[in-house]
Image 1 (tube, helix red, strand yellow):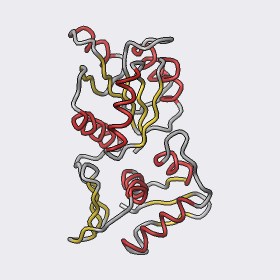
Image 2 (cartoon, helix red, strand yellow; image 1 turned 135 degrees about the vertical axis):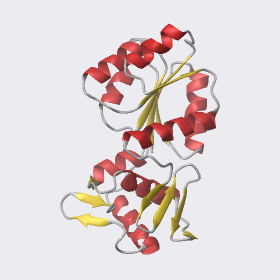
Image 3 (cartoon, one colour; image 1 turned 90 degrees about the vertical axis):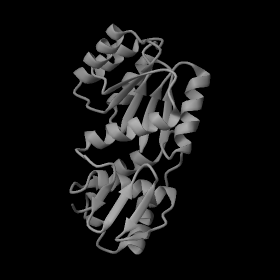
Length: 218
């Protein structure tokens, strides 16, 4: 899943980006509040991690602007502002979670997965579609009782489709889940991954909706 980090501290920002990438996330990183506002409103991200003390535009103002635009992307505020009034202001501005620095990387990852899960109306941590079960935390997939080995990209494609089970995702929407800035996307990449997933999980796992995209039936 692709997330945005808005953090102006270079050491912390780089550490968060590297650490979350190591846990399977695709991560873009911005350093100013106006950039955070612009990118969150783009609709390219499953979730955002937002510092409040950002240059150019305060994080609270950026978040409030994003919410006024109608954007519902889940946002986790990660900040050193630990007073109760700060927490209240952050949540009232539209934050979905509020965490005070420092934070354990695995806890941050778990909180992001929970935000994305709730945003898609999923109660259980694991995703189920027919005989297929996907666990985001362990990045494992089962077909009935058997574990199915998938590449990182294959897992990410299946994860995106299962989060949106019953809805059609265009190829461009799936690509947005897979690739952070600077990563090259080949023209037939999604088709190749879908072919591999069908071979491993069954031809009926992913439906093609001609001229639109792909979907996993509920």
